[in-house]
Image 1: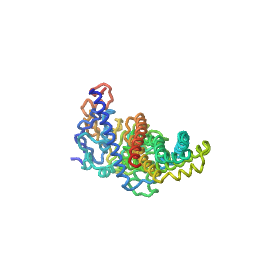
Image 2: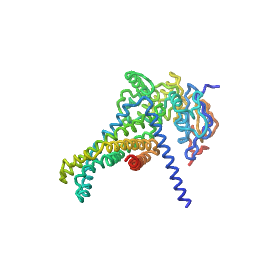
Image 3: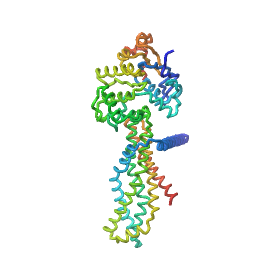
Image 4: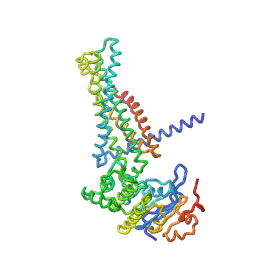
Length: 253
Length: 256
């Protein structure tokens, strides 16, 4: 048996009658990079929000380190959440704070570090995403790609055990994409972090993922190493990987 | 017929649901208020926003309300030669009713709407989710400082509105209507009791709580992008204004 840090069991969720997750099962292995792929609007972000308990499932269980987080009290939930860092799809920076204050926020909330030490860590993390020296700017004054990288720095500043990335490279230029991918790989290699990445970048997925899971119609239809997925004989998986408009995939209405 | 009942029933269910959500956020805010640490910086920032930044509009409202009320009272009182009572009547009205209510309505339009818009934007851009993810409770972080600021600042603004209102009344009465200045001031001192002012201040503290709570509530549960934020803002102003007027009647009936 593998060491699963997150176990998702029979998860159901629907929004105003429309089922999005339909009995989804998934195990995330500790210290690995798992990519989740699937159609836009197919429930990938919804799944990620369940993992960090921003959404409550209609039924099913989510175990983080063996603790079912579905019906946890807020105090207990916050303990669990401290294991996580998350990058939101549109970065979700606090627009009333400067870039530096945004990255410092988790440190101020959860550590007793001195201001100088916080500054050092903030600059170090901003340096990692290629943005040193912009800590006094406001989020509204920088580009979308820069905001995303600041969000990345904020997610990683506490060096959490589990990192969730909601489309970390969408909207970045090719060189920056490469750097962000490298960042994900390095955080896993150096810190042993578990990463869950939602991505539409199939080549990057096949290159850096340890495990790939594909969501289709509210379930995981394939799970395995990139090799397994590439060699899958499921026509839906093959259609998605090659990006053909014609095929068995139900494109909905 | 069934159609009408259906509509009424739907309305009732939505209203009860809404009341429940408001109570939940209120109780949550209450609990978090007494859980350390108190966010002093955030509180001061909100006090500045609700209080200091409302000074101009409150002074303007107070002065003109006092002035026009003096004109109207004089019009009536002069018919039976009671011009000497214009002063205390204006002071009563300002302290007990017009000061608290008009100040609160102005601050609702200024700060209550802004709170709904700000929290609503934070909701639709996932900033509130981000707070949850970073294990920082958004009720404590966003709602508590705002409600406290409302409860603390509204009485102060009301005192100012009362004072400026009486000054406005004085200017109109003494300089335009030629009422004796000593009579105007002397009768206010004679008839206006501390209790009148205090009751008005208690009311204004309650109004301050209402307008910030509703502003936060509407923003917190905003949905549907820019349009949703706009709707939340409008609804916050309408709902807070109505609640202020209704609770004003209830409190007046109990206190006086």
